[in-house]
Image (cartoon, rainbow, N blue to C red):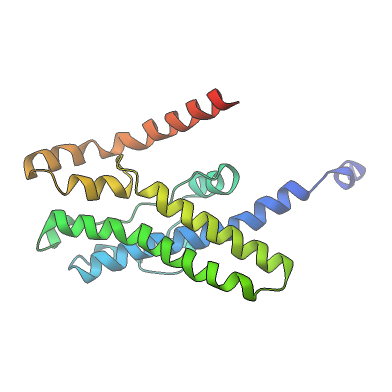
Length: 189
């Protein structure tokens, strides 16, 4: 039995563990930015729940993190926001939604600027992967399909009656997105 474990190729497991670090960083910054923006606009829900934190344990959804590391598609625990606490609820939701992708683009810019200064191969690879993942997370979240951030921005331009009606169906968006991704992968295989 011991011989069995010695013969296993652990390189994939190592790559998986290494890719979890960038995923955790990108998710943590993204979700913290949502909470910080909401707090700045008058909603302290995320702050009271401890979601304005750089502690990744406050933000990760274990399955979502695993999916992000393995399939480069995943999710975090959504930050709770109460739009009723905003002076202008639709605008508050749009700005709060944009804060996540904006934080990813800022992280991407910072890390991309650092890359030419890095001489260590492993550090370079980690920073490069983090930058790429952060860019991808920012772009993906701008897609205007609920529950992604882009939908909150796009929907903010709708009349109130239609806006609040569409937001009620937000919970059905993620299964549709997952099915769409799986279908695309099946077609491209």
